[in-house]
Amino acid sequence: MLLETLELSLTLNGRAILRAINLRIAAREIHVLLGANGSGKSSLAWCLMGCGGYAPQAGEIRFDGDRIDHMPLHERARRGMALAWQEPARFEGLSVAQFLRAGAENADVVKALRAVGLAPDEYLSRSLDKTLSGGERKRIELAGMLTLQPRLAIFDEPTAGIDMLSLDDVMRVIETLRQNGSAVLLITHQETIAAQGDSASQLCGGRIVCQGKPDAVIANYKARSCRRCDGETCGYD
Amino acid sequence: MTELDPLYQAFRQIGEDPNAILTPETAYLVAYGHQVVGMQSVPGVIIIPEQTKQGIHARVTVLEGQQLVQPVHLCFSLFEKYGGQHIDLELTLQPGSRATFWSHCIFTLPEIARHSMNARVDIQDGAQLTYNEVHYHGVSGGIEVIPRAQVTVGPQGRYIADFTLVQGRVGLLDIDYDIKVQEDGIAELTSKVYGRDTDRIHIREAVSLDGANARGLIKSRVALDDEASAEITGATYGNAAGARGHVDCLEIVRGNAKASAIPEVRVTHPQAKVTHEAAIGSVDQMQLETLMARGLSPEEAVDRIILGMLG
Image 1 (cartoon, rainbow over the protein chains, first blue to last red):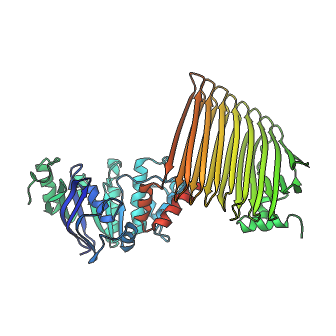
Image 2: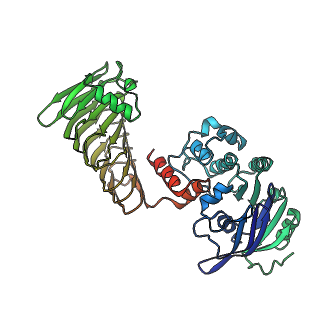
Image 3: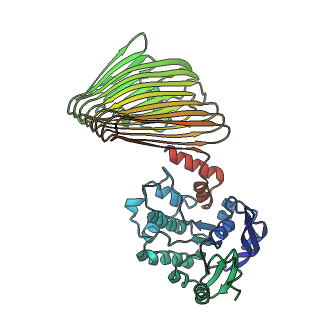
């Protein structure tokens, strides 16, 4: 198993954010994580990646069999984990090319940009700052995953801020990653994107309330009209 | 060995090609301390240097309507361990002229030195000046840089100034610039400074938007490490209809460094508008974690962020 969490729990400011999460993702698997706003999806992504303030209070995170939950963020990245953020950061003075090559010096940045529908001539030398729209930065973030080619790519709402016509680009990037050997943890609200997964989990109130094939999890998610219900009313399948 | 050899050597040490800078087609002025060691005027630019008791007085004039393709180079250096240099500069861009100046201030060798400048810059009707000043210092921390400037930007004139001191120790930097902008004129000032150890940085830049539709931007980017300190004052005064000004200060602070930003905005005309933004603090956590999530260590990520900001 590439990624495995065992009873992973996270509390922030006295509030339980993640409760006994058990998640397993195999190599080359696309696992979809569904859940309403505030259900803990992004927190799980940050906790897995080791972001500041998101150290679990209980449970384990294993990557390729090794416990990584005490490792700093960059050590996890060097082992092959990567995160594409829901809201990509802006960097004044850092060019798109420099960003795409960060941690991936020899990557084909031209090919990566083309894969997300951006013209390399136009974008490579541009600063990754507020002159780029949110949608452009999301695409660059996707391209950044292609240049890294991680063993596990975590996508936090990759379609947020991207127009409907671009959903195919997102799926193409994910499929390319898989073909090149990556596993993917895909956090999304988009059913059409979620349906492309191999497996799925539904998160509610910090708990996994449903796991299985994407179709079944999507159906459960829709049928329960999931809201902030503390994970109790969704039931367990 | 010629008198220019030390400069050529210094340029090579900082990664610049002197043969691409001091060419037969470029106007330039080269001074070591209070000694003028090289000067060249070209058609459209007149440079008249004079060695005085106080230092060097230089009158530089870009003639009316001349649009210079090649930049004008001002090379100010000291190649002794101790010394001083004072430059009194009168820079005039006559109506409709356009020029880019590069001021190379190379103080990599001195341990204790003072470089001061009094500049009076007159950008006349429709003229455009881009003035890039780049400092290269050694690691002594004993350099004092004291530039003063009074700049007038005439109607439809344009003044773009960029000051960079990110290589070596700053020592003491004390900038004080006053810029007056007439109707439809533009002034954009950017300063980028990296202070380390016990470096002290004072920057005061004031832009008076005196003419209708005048525009002003003061942008400061400062990184501080160790015990360094900085006080940045960006003042903009909107004194005419349609005048628009903005002050933008960003300071990254690490170690025991101390920083302050003092935006001073004042409007004396109801149709003028001046805004400001300032951010002081440690490296942005989101930026840091984005780069660390790509495998960069915290130190590598911070360097990348700071160098990007000061790039």
